[in-house]
Length: 164
Image: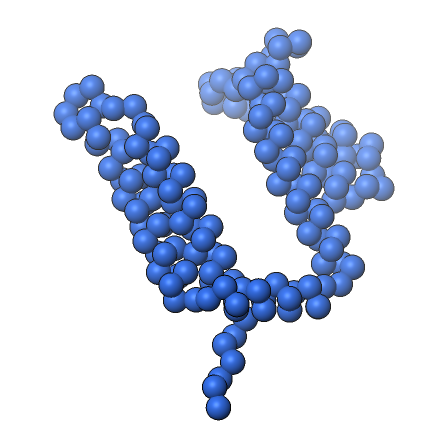
């Protein structure tokens, strides 16, 4: 009698590792060349990391099979509760808002983009206290800007409208 394989995400994890490693490797290879010494010196360690990601991802893909990943997804779909769906929506909103934050960060400046990001995340977590979320996100973004810019001397992207 053949033993049924356990459901897991090894094939998916290996695929993601290979894709991420390839992208990371291409970006590492495109780093600026060093004008002195070995021109590829700044790229060597990132290229080694990329090769490791691709190698271990391929090993994980070869060790596993696609059927066990499909079984794992089916098992999750069967056992999903309403609370799980809400948690996944919150995670997706957080990821999407972080990507939007990274895109608008340079254009809107630190204070406005961080205020919007922190305010949105706090509102996603607790929709009932919007006024509190706005106040806390404003104080947080201004205080962190003040600490970095005036106390530590580290410049952050300026807010175009307010010139801070």
